[in-house]
Length: 176
Figure (cartoon, rainbow, N blue to C red):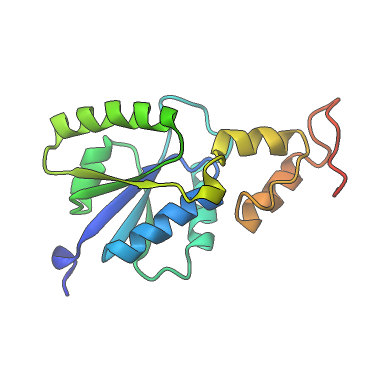
């Protein structure tokens, strides 16, 4: 099968950092599509990232090395342009809570206006990850909390390096 014949989907995001919830969505998408390209936004316009793009890509590549049909790439253009660059007609996004839906509903209409040929498919979060968000994980880790059950091991290790005792004045978790 040539690359042009593959059913390709993209899974775009900032992945700052990648969580087990992200990985669950990506792996489930990989079971549906021939090829999944995880698109890491180089510099998200709506937030400052904690991790460099190289770290974010490295975390994803490490966590997904067992997925033969998943690739990781960086993008700095419109997400629909990224989809076109990869020949993807589908964008896969995860939904956890109602607020995710409200944001994604708006983005879907913008993207469909820009590229009606790119369809967005939503996968509901698995129940055990419905509360996990990158921002929540960063908050817990910054105060010295244990995030081992929320992120891949290299991400948890990096947080421990960054915040060995948590923020000044924050209690350190008993596991430390």
